[in-house]
Image 1 (cartoon, rainbow, N blue to C red):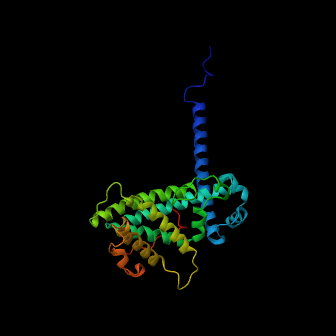
Image 2 (cartoon, one colour; image 1 turned 90 degrees about the horizontal axis):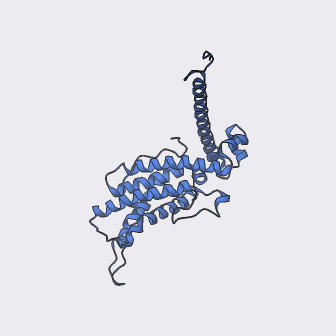
Image 3 (spheres, rainbow, N blue to C red; image 1 turned 60 degrees about the horizontal axis):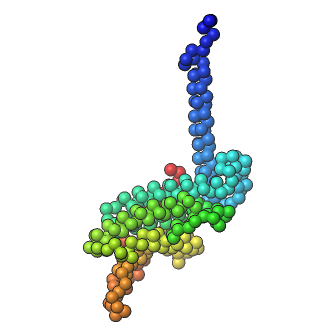
Length: 270
């Protein structure tokens, strides 16, 4: 048998496969880079045009065609989910960094609230686009208290609630309070998330003017509500029980609170 025509192991077939793999890898990297660029372009378009911008408007603003967006994201819901995942991932990193900026539990809570408000304020349009549920999913998406919205924002608030829970427990230890396993206080983190989110979103829609508090003042107020409310977590022994510290407190918006650096804008890329 003439073996001269036989293909040796590791010869042209293996080389061709390696070349194909290299091309596939480069193509995958190109697609990821292109997808990331389209997400940035969408955020810029939504920031300027508003959360109800159509695919056509977004594509025109990005200097491309709708077909490109459909190729990478399927439809507008897919595009909205992709923008939400990117924006919420960035916001989560900023909030966790803010929480770690202080050793004092209450200051950590304040830092998180202020970071959340400043990030949302930096682009209310992008915040709304990233956190609200796509129209066709409204009827079938399960909701949990305080975390309504698309999957990325639900997971985000659940993880942030877990961090707030740690700060909350540490704050209780710092003020010398011990709570039993049957205490209603363990519902506090999800209640706190709901209050911060609902208040923050109402604050975002308040027209600019002298009656709209700054992000810092709003964060001070929310932190005071969250912390001073600790005195009312357990029901009083009787209606005649004396008022607790929360009833005796002054306007929380004027109380002293920690400060932190301003958070980066929502539009900043990770």
